[in-house]
Length: 248
Image (cartoon, rainbow, N blue to C red; front, side, top):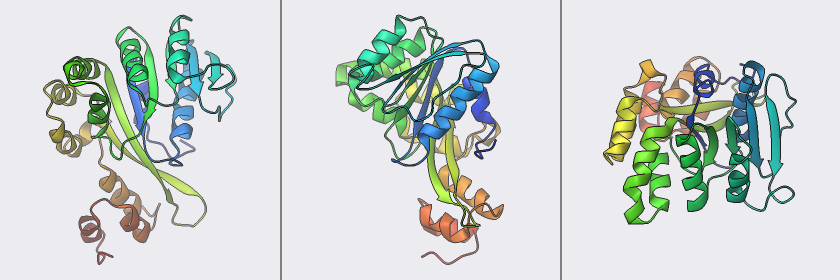
């Protein structure tokens, strides 16, 4: 709440198992969002949590959960090995700092499928493009299997950017959210990934929101300036129209 993150993030981490992906460019507050989600689990559930980070940015204090933080370089030599070792420690929740390579992605999917809650960051420029980004890392003969695993495990994809606050003091996180509803999972299963964006647009009742819609909402509430909304918008013309401005 303090960070201005939507309440729905709590419901994502209250799930027993599955995959939660956080995307966004470097410096977009991904680590802070992940830390807030881990903190919510820590305050409410007696879970065993293992994090694999590069570097450790937030040091957690055990509350209801027991948290073991591992750092790349000092505790493990790769995300893959860190994850492989973590799975032997019987964790309920695993945070994987980055999923960049095929081996780490494959193991994270398997972990999510076998009863673990997995939180990870991915490098994509929208929530809707995350499934394709993961599937495309794999060779053609494996892609069908990976799509099925992703469809079976996906809880949500959160894409975020930090936008300057209207008062000029600090930043506010603007989030695009794709929830792993039956419809979303079905499109992933059927490889109709190009339709994901329109599902997000139509999925407000499930807590979904497109990035430009989140920008417009924040600007109308006075959280960010209209100029900032326009600057960060994907479709500047459309956002300008909705905010009663001329496109830059």
